[in-house]
Length: 153
Image (cartoon, rainbow, N blue to C red):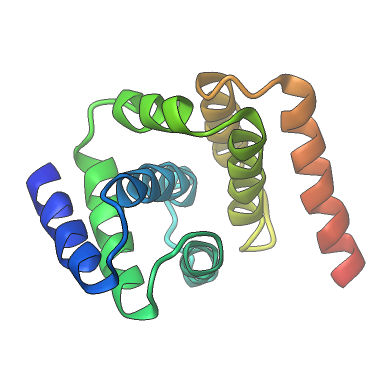
């Protein structure tokens, strides 16, 4: 499976001329975001749309390749034994602020279907712990997303 992902990124990199380090981080971030989408065992199209929009706006990914990246990330998450390969890569290359921002994106995904499942909250808490994002920042990210949602309604 990792070979398929690497081949995907090699094709993408040749077309865009980017360095080979960035896509691996993109895949790791996409895989962790996919963990939140599948946490409640329901595949809501609003969550998938939100994931797609996040990947396009936060990472240098072209519109034509984002669906393939999402499919690869979802498949990788389903086949992975744990989160270590994704978490370790993120911790190695992301600063604390970037990791906290990733947790905020997870909260946005969890609320994309207008309801927070306890399973989603548990998954985000676990990922925040693994990414060494402090509890205060975990809560601030959640409250920030809730405030943004209540202001937009």
